[in-house]
Length: 118
Length: 108
Image (cartoon, rainbow over all chains, first blue to last red; front, side, top):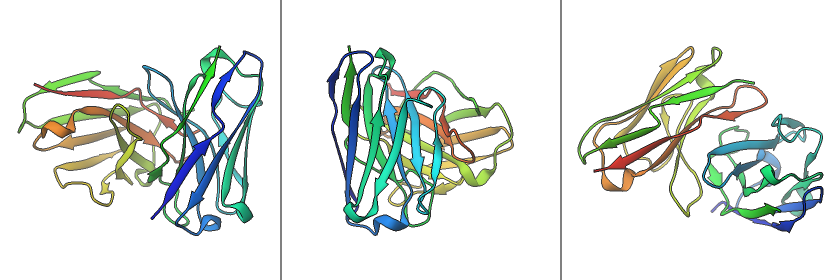
């Protein structure tokens, strides 16, 4: 069973940094693209960034480009999001998501970790 | 980036009725890379449709997707009370991936 568990969220002041982690289990991590998607309170979903199965970055949302960095550690079955220069508008529930092997769809989601910038 | 515009903003229907949700893209999209997700309060998003018309595992057949070019549609053929949620279209053909702003489906 695919399991994704995010951690690292919390309260941070504007301009600060946080590093989110996503621990993956139940599947062959190296064969999966991995993504971060956020849900802004009272608003919708926003794809933040993705990392392909071939270790190439898929890209970033324009709103986070230059401030956020996605990375993965295949040996630890983990995905990360380094968030710098945080702004109040980055306040959101951050989800880790993946699809089936060698697939781009956002098929499986974690429960999310809340980031509050205030 | 591709802008996805969903309509209507809110749909209020009775159980058993048909719901038609629209998603219009700012440029032509490949049908391989359009999806629909369902979001309920306190839950993670749930993939309903991918590749424009393919139902994800475990999704009831009352959910169907269609479309091409810049216009895509999610249809719920017979609304059930548990379909009360916000529905998002999404494209994943090129970076940055984007979501529509959502359509809220209310059950009368």
